[in-house]
Length: 72
Image 1 (cartoon, rainbow, N blue to C red):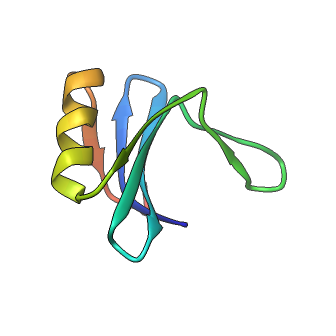
Image 2: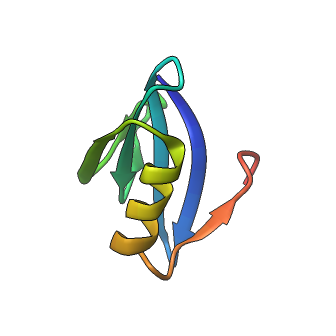
């Protein structure tokens, strides 16, 4: 699993993750990180077979979310 894109909507973070070699994506919404740096989404959407599909769903489900850089 690899985080492809990150979004922020107020205090909430949302991720698009790649599950399999750029062919299977999932959106993670309202992601929290625990003390062991493991990420836990409160909800998910997918699976999507392209990044474009995952991005379209992200914008539909979280229209106010803005893409952030990985370093943020």
